[in-house]
Amino acid sequence: MNHASNAGAGPAADPALQSAVAKVKRHVLPLFVIMFIVNYIDRVNIGFVRSQMETDLGIGAAAFGFGAGLFFIGYALFEVPSNLLLQKVGARAWLTRIMLTWGLVATAMAFIQNETHFYILRFLLGIAEAGFFPGVIYYFTRWLPGAERGKAIAIFLSGSAIASLISGPLSGALLQIQGLGWHGWQWMFFIEGMASVLLCGFVWFWLDSKPHDAKWLERAEQDALVAAIDEEQRAREAATTVKPSLGALLKDHQIVLFCVIYFCIQLTIYAATFWLPTIIKRMGELNSVEVGLFNSIPWLISIIGMYAFARLAAKWKFQQAWVAAALLIAALGMFVSTTGGPIFAFVAVCFAAIGFKSASSLFWPIPQAYLDARIAAGVIALINSVGNLGGFVAPTTFGLLEQHTGSIQGGLYALAATSVLAAIVVFFARTQPGPRDDSGLPAPRLSRSHA
Image 1 (tube, rainbow, N blue to C red):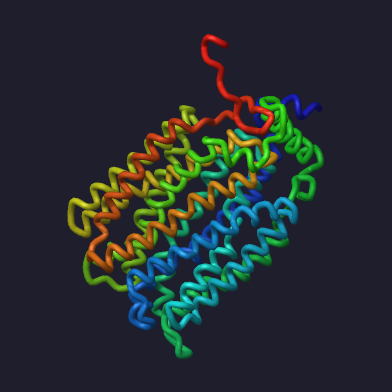
Image 2 (cartoon, rainbow, N blue to C red):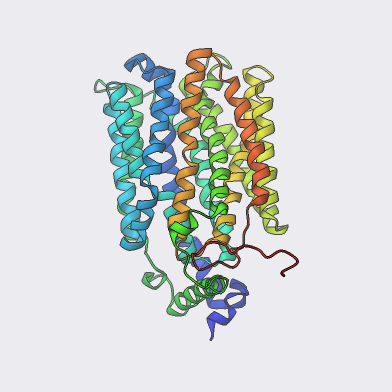
C-alpha cells in the first residue's frame, strides 16, 4: 500500500495510519498529561505558601513576586538550547533528564531559609524545566499528522488545567502535615518534588524517540505514520526553494507576532495562577484546604471551556477567530473583576479562566501550521520561552503593586488591555508559510500591477 499517497487525506484514508494514530494517542497522551500535571504543580505551588513563607522566612509580597517570576528567566534563557538538544539526544532521554532535574530542584525548595535561597532555586527550577513543553509540542509533530495535532495539544494542555484543579486541594492538605521539625510548606515542596523524581523512571521505560522505535506499533503502522508526516513536510517544503534558517525566521514578522500573542496569553494565566489564592483568602476566614478547594473551581470551569472551544474550532475552521474570541472573554473577566468585592472578583476570574486557558490551547496550531518542520523545534521553543516571560512580568508587577499600593487593581486593568491587544494582533497571524526568498524569509508579495 502506498501510505504516502494517502497521507494528505487524513488518518481515515489508510487503516494502518488510523490504527497508528489511535495507538499513539492511547500510549503517549496519558503519560504527557500526567507529566504536565506534576510539572505544573511544581511550578506554581508557591502560590499556596506565600503567607507561610512570609511568616517563617520574612519573604514579602515584592520578594515573593520577583522570586516567582525568576523561574521564567531561567526557563527563557535555556528553552531553545534545550529543545535543540532534544532533537540530537532523542525525546526519551532528554524528557527523562528534564523531569529528573526539575524534580530534584523542586524537592530542594523544602530547604530554603531566606530570600536568596528562594531566588536561586526558582531560577534553577526554570533552567531544569526548560524544553519540556516545546519538546512535547515538537514530539507531536514527529508522531501525529497535522489533522490530529490540534486535538492532541488540547488534551495535553488540559494537564495544566487539571493540575490547577487538583493542586489547590492537594497542596492545602499537604500544608497540614507537621513533623520532624518541618513546617507544612516544607512537606508540600518535598512530597510534590519527589513525585516528579519517581515518575521520571517510568518515563524512561515508556517513551520512544521515533515511531520506528515503538515496539507497540506494527511495522505497517510505523511506516504509515512516518509516510504521512513526511508527506506533509514535503508539501510544506514545496512552498520554499531553500531550507529556512533559524536566523532568517527570527526576522520573520510572523514569528514576532506569535511571540507577542503568546506573551499576552501567558501574562494573564500566570497572574491568575500566582495571585488567585490571595484573592480567595480575602473572601473570608478560610483555612488552607478551603482555599485550595476554591482555587480549583476556575480551573475546573476552564477545562470544560477548553473542550468546548476545541470542538467548535474543529467544526468551524478559523483558528484566529477562535483565539480572538477566547482572549476577549479573558479580557472581559479580568476587567469585571475590578468592579466588585472579593467574591465578585472570584466569579469574574472563573469566567476569565475559560478565555485565557482556551486561548492557550487554540493558539498552538497556528504557528505549527506556519513553521517548516526542519526548524520547528527551535522556533516553537523560542515562542514558548518569550511567551513565558509573561510569567516573570505578571507576578513581579503584581507583587510590587500590592506592596506599594495595597491593591492589584491596576494590574487587572493591564491584563484586560493586553488580552484585547492580542485578540486584534492574532488576525494578522498566518497559518500558511507561503513562498520564501533565498534567505529563507517570506518573499514579498507582488502588487496587483505586477501580479
